[in-house]
Amino acid sequence: MEATTLETAKGAVESYLAALRRGDGEAVARCFAPDARIWMVLGWGRPADLRETWSTPTALEVREMIEEDGSVAVRFAGGATEWFKVEGGRIRRHWGARAASALFARL
Image 1 (tube, one colour):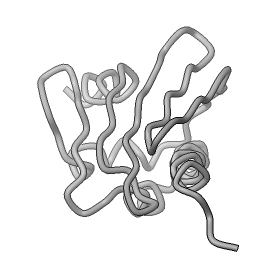
Image 2 (cartoon, one colour):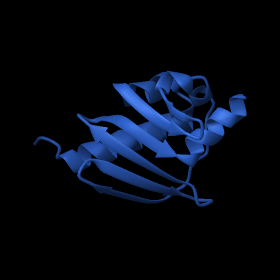
Image 3 (spheres, helix red, strand yellow):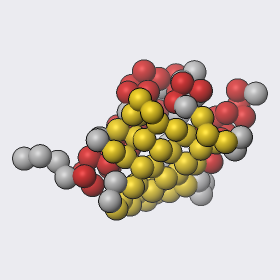
């Protein structure tokens, strides 16, 4: 049975989160489409801009995950929220304050 768009979208985000928890930067990068963009405080970035930070295991507690038409929103413990647009089973757009804080940690 072929996965529906919603199952694929949620699965892509769950794979991304699992790889972040492990600190597997290469697996995180594979969750993104080749033309993916990530919204950060300083504007749009590419997954390669954050690859180094993905190599550190991250404790993430998901409080809620909702999906609709290829979009997934995740609310984390502590109040952070991230939004993903998934196409073809890979993350194409990602918005979230957690991504911005990773950038600041590198500055």
